[in-house]
Length: 456
Ligand code: 5AD
Ligand code: SF4
Image (cartoon, rainbow, N blue to C red; front, side, top):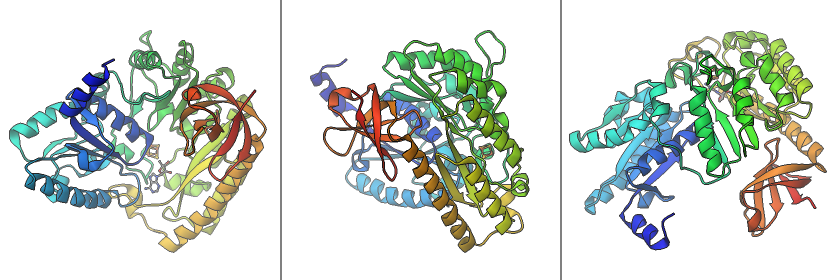
């Protein structure tokens, strides 16, 4: 550990890096790893754009007019870069993530202010790209798909001193839901070998982490090589992780209903450190729409999985994703979605208006739904989901559960953590409890969180 004077010198000599992250947890993870990679070049993270010598926009392409948002951000950064140059300095701008992957050359043409364009599979090569940019000038582009190479070329992670860490175990998707860009931007499904995952987990545990969140676009499709050379399932991997000393909590996200295998469902009943929370997107409650979405499952399949998981782990909190206004969705289809929601009863959920993604089959399908209809359906669905979330939260009041106190709250003497069901819990507790996994009695359900107090 450097002493303060060393640290001050380091701070002054280092270049400053500002990373702006859009989108999913996968991107949050990737941003952390990019920060690690750049730390080897002596880039220190800063919270302010104005201080930065390098800015990375880690972009998301899943919904909305993502590319347009990035271009307007780049417009603002161009002005900043010009001011910097007038003052005799410089500013390096990199665009990473799925918009970089999808736009590539087009971005270099439209926004020459960008120095580096790097896809989600190749950001471990950032140091080389920076060198190439210094040598060649212009915009340097790297948007290949060598997934394994990426995982093995990253330095051991230092990002995030906290107790919870994301651990990426799977990348890409072969499902090709007709609304989704992920198979195009993140490429084919790839499972990281168990040895690499276990080694990274051990390093995380050694640095004080007690909860890992296993990440993948299709995490429960993970089928990596086991330490015995044979293919393992996610349940097997979770079992191995659970046996590591000091690992107290395991979560995984995001899953596909067709990959909820029997052993994974059983794991929820058998492994204490596997948290009672499952994010299982269904998207729609209409079989006709599920078929048009190419989801590869019916509502009955989905409800069957939910029933089995609840049987294995009765208190499990179920979360999901929904899309309203998919092409061809009529009132009856939407009513079927509401009825599925009523049947499942969600602890939390994300819901979106269908957003046509260029290059995906649904974008050009007949029966596009007008925006007013989408907005109305979304309002109704979100109202119901919010109600269910309140019901779930209220039902947990009075329970005493372990809460991992991860950060300071808005008020002094307040810490915020997560319950096993992933609720945010605000606890009246002093600084010395920061980072501890401690029993808390849940006392009140609020709009988006819980209040609790330390159990005696
Ligand atoms: N329009 C709206 N929502 C989408 N999602 C993915 N693609 C689209 C789209 N084109 C949602 C799905 C998915 C979540 C991550 O984002 O619900 O599960
Ligand atoms: Fe997209 Fe479907 Fe793959 Fe999920 S399963 S990433 S929604 S294509």
